[in-house]
Image: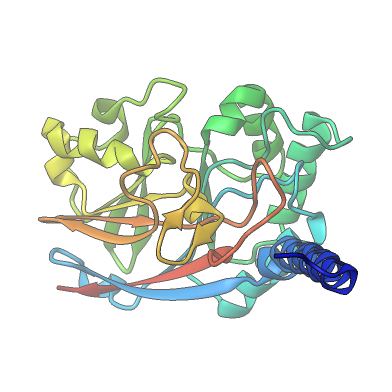
Length: 292
């Protein structure tokens, strides 16, 4: 069977149209993922029910942000926008669960500038109290540098430490470990021996919850807050996340319950590797505490 020159020409035009159409679709998807989805801040409201919550903390609101990665693909204007939204929501406490900067960043900003610029923006948070912990990228860049930048703006960093949060004569205990993936978390130091109130534990890597559950002091913790996974950052429908980091592969995003211990994994604000988010918007979480 012979093919006419006209048929061959049509075939070439069809292939060309297909290639051009595919290129346009790919460019559109990249534009959407890189510019629109990456800045589409999702405000997630959760209710955390805790059995031993003192009545003074009923309705206590905790804002959580995580994984800012300011010196790579998170522009200062976007962090400023996130801080503005936190301030509008007026939480009682703001917690930042690690990764202020990026190890191996490809931008022209040096790590010192990024760490201090990040701390400067976070210093405009208006909540009564703000606490932070380190993430694996912070340690990879320089833990003393990131800690110094935050503390220069009077933003506390918990490293295997606990502090009481007091209200109307009652208290809950806020605890934060050293980074679980790159450093030396010590739950014996982090969680108080005899807490006289609920225990909120900040750990950057969510999969560390399995270690918490096996530790003798793990039964004292009521809520663990983590980030690290970015929720996968790029999620394919019917497939899920393309890439997940070590210690962020089991509990990827959202709320999990293990008996009396609850875990919440925030998807983070920033991006790593590529400046894209798809089906996985950046997240600001407002946790409202209630009695069980």
